[in-house]
Length: 353
Image (cartoon, rainbow, N blue to C red; front, side, top):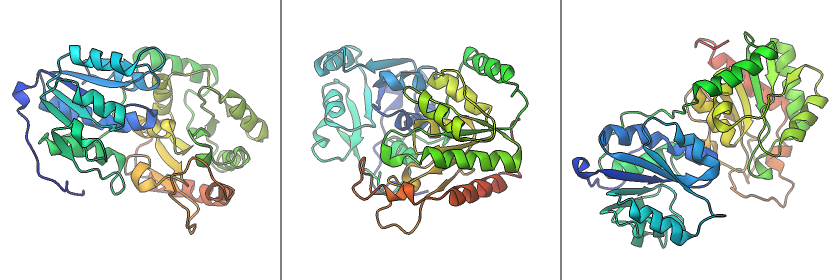
């Protein structure tokens, strides 16, 4: 594990009555940032521990047993000034800004908290009195988040990412699997989503891959989907020659419960990919414009695949002027071979049905 390249400033944990962790935006980023929660709860056993996030990611942390409450920022319904007032009235002793954009830096600065932790991003350090060096370009996103805790002397006692679907979430998934005749089947989920089009492998290739997996293994293919994706997975299923199963609509925690029952997941770099890894599925992540060593599916059992040899890999661009070749040049053969390596790597580990 890389060492933290800055001195530690231990905070007086016994004096912290209320703490706030800030992480906005993408679901996957919020999933990975949740690695700090058990560690903070261990260091602050008697404190109120809140998380500030946006509506789309609220459920990721809402059910976490380390979290006291979730502060939701809804940009359509509240202004930045409203958010600042809300945070100030809660009288936090410690605020940790894991997001570090201009808005969250300002919220942190005006929170009134005596301990304000953030990263040395340009134009943001005025907001913090404890500053961590940002290593987002050299360590996995989980370690980037843990760096903030190590900066303030919080011991890292848990390096796993945990999500907590409810009994109702699991019952919902059990009902779908039972009705589809999949209760005892080994499941392979194919996730076609991705926040940027540049991160999306082709639907026709996913269909060919799914058929190849189903034919070779006899395992059952499921096609999870989120908002705006139903037609996409229906088109994928229509291109397949093997049977495939489309789940009913799922919330993020219902999707987590589904991935708890799924042996394998093949996914573009996306929020569901990180949810699958946290849920315990064995994950093959398909990468191109993002860097797997920084944003790959977390966990030693998981693997990634990309079209090696391209100078533009890891460009981090949301649009492409050269035909998105990192995805279009990635063959079905290459991804299938990576999937077989994943299954061989995990063959000695116990698998769920």
